Amino acid sequence: MASSRAIRSGAGRDPHAPVTNLVLLRLLVSARLRSQLAYRGSFLSDVAGQVLLGLTEFVELYAIVHNVSSFGGMTFAQTLLVFGLASVAFALGDLLLGETDSMSETIRSGKLEVLLVRPLPVLLQLATSDFQLRRVGRLIFALAALAAALLFADVTWDPVKVLLALITPLAGAAIFCALFLGAGAMQFWILDGRQFANAFTYGGRYVASMPGAALFFPIQIFFTFVIPATLVAYAPSLVILGLDGPAGIPAWTGWLGLPAAVALSGLMLLLWRAAIKKYTGAGG
Amino acid sequence: MHAYWELAKSSFRRHSTYRTAAVAGAFTNSVFGLIRASLLLSAITTAGGAIGGYSAMEAATYVWLGQALLAPLGLFGTAELANRVKSGDIAVDLSRSVNLTASYWAQDLGRAAFDVLPRGLPPLIVGALVTGLAMPGSPGPYLLGFVSILAAVSLNFLGFFAINLLSFWVLEIRGFWMLYMVVMNLLSGFLVPVAWFPGWLLDFARATPFPSMLQTPVDILAGRTDGGESLAMVGIQLLWLAVLLIIVQMMVRFGSRRLVVQGG
Image (tube, rainbow over all chains, first blue to last red):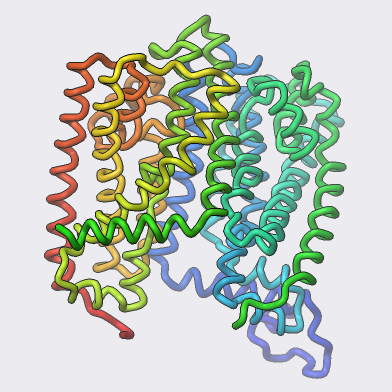
């Protein structure tokens, strides 16, 4: 603890020790957090807004489900498990890399040049430059929904399912991070194309939080094998709940979340590097 | 009056320069339409044919009309005024010889007029091809629907304008903005038809102006309501228009006395 306090205050650190990215990361994040907590009223209203956002996403699902006995072959508690897993994954991804979604503004306003001249990876700066603690509000609601789902959905647990339930939110978060990264990279080529990327980031979130069997067959295929949105929560939920999937999302895809996250992250990182290389300045 | 017409026209031209954005928006609205239509249709199939008075075809039509009208109706709003308060440019706006609300309103109508075709038509075409659309055959619903759309554009504009005007009092409107967006999206019937809500939420939604901002024009255009009922719904829209207009005018009046322009 003593060492972390020393880093934060800047005192006591060996002045000749090289400043690693990790040290800088901690400095940047803690500075961000303190600045956001300084305006307590504004911060709390932001957090409340984020909780409410999660709540309306839930009501949106509930408004459909309360009309039917089963939705996409799932009971209400089972759909809540999908919703909870997807919400936790999205909240984490949004917290880390949600900022790349507005890349076109960063490019247009010339902020990117400022980031590029600093001796730090651009991505690290983006993740910390606007580390929005208010987005934690969304995570709080998501965790509550997930806890309720685990309580109400009858799951016969075994070690394998526990393992899957632990991997799933993290793999899902990585998938959303990768999608946000791809959305950011895409905006280097199509400056006005932010909404285009929303079809995959926010569209992905929407698909991820709903029972995949309720989707049209081609949509199932697209959002499983091209944009792996159903792998975030629905497919693993099939395994955890012991259900059979629809034709486009068979139950064995429940284990594809992690490999998909790794593959997609790698691809999107390559795309991001290509995008940064391609950047020639906005005339700033 | 001529000044406002010119403002509307120049706003139309301004938005017509962002073609890529329009294409991207139309694409995304169509993708979301596919997802939403499939979810609602799946629920209706399970329920055995209809939910809340919507058959499969009617629910699909509701989704596609909603996705098509989303951009023209201005459901995402703009924070232009709040940004101008932040930068101090609001001082220029207030010293102009046009009414503040009316000048922004005219510009928003110009934007809406541009958005109708490039952002509205693609989702309808996708919808017609994928699920089919159940549109009325008589001219009545379209005429009344046009009036209802105009009213809804104005209502959405005034709602967001009121949130923008809060920046006369507070430094950061993001929290209010978020709160408004979240509640409006749900209660306007954009996510799920208002008629699908559980009873308590339905009653609550109907006591707010939000269904008038999207659900009403969509229902009228789809011919879900007959002539008399549609007229009554447009009447409710106009009533809310008057209420919001009074609120906004009061805010401009008292707010501009309070406003301290910084920077400048």
